[in-house]
Length: 386
Image 1 (cartoon, rainbow, N blue to C red):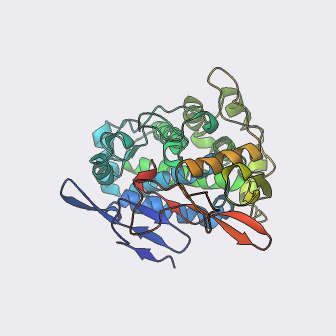
Image 2 (tube, one colour; image 1 turned 180 degrees about the vertical axis):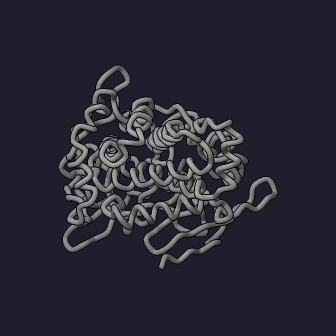
Image 3 (cartoon, rainbow, N blue to C red; image 1 turned 90 degrees about the vertical axis):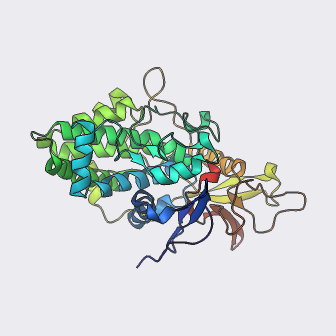
């Protein structure tokens, strides 16, 4: 059983912390908004818990891209959950004229919460929602992105960076509907269930590496080729991943060459539930310890894929040590790391907009035996860190 607190405090926020789901209320322009009133927000947070249940090694992974995928999965969960309602399927098909890839009530996630946040920080969210699954964001190495950016641009912040994968997924979903003969609400229900199955199997088969987006995408293409060949889903999925740079064209084609091997990995029950660890030097940050232990995105690669470069081919794949260092410094820049006992002269970085009523850091350094270990505390979806 997963406990749910519908009003944990005063904040435009929601989070999952392996103890339960927490939702909040906040006031904007004289109106009180409850984050738990939004089905999109509720299903997003529940998505974190669902992903954690079958891919728990992602929770502590020291990787910007892995953290961003967790946020994308939350949004994809909200989209697929909404499509289980016949009334919403009918409304969206009418609104878009049957062209699902158009911006609609479905693609515009958390409109009410987005409005509330917009009253304080207009540039941090979309003009009509929190995030829109219909977008044109193209993959970039997160090391090349700023820590924060307005909603019109990508940053390395996980919610921001997640939008590229979500956009590719939604484009694939729209393309899958276009392959059906009827393109009605029953067909939309079927393709939503099929892409959900493809997504989960793709995640199960994907190696946890710094370029995690491409591993999931390539595995999804392999699953589509092996399990849904008669439906022709592979082509629209490939188009979405290529157009958003999640995979370069050559790798998107090659991903379907060994589908049975990937499907076998997806069905395997022998996958490790923890990631390899590495020692990361942090002496330069004045934290009182020369190094820490992190859980690295360092599993053996099952597929030789990576995100697309801006010109042609694949973007460089960072090593797991570089990815971990980038992730750690990103936490410091955004004030998301809690220090149990800061060293003398080394103050914690605290966000100016952080809530005063409850903790909103996502990670902490814990003493475990003779080591200091970086551990995730919660997956926090508050607006202050955007």
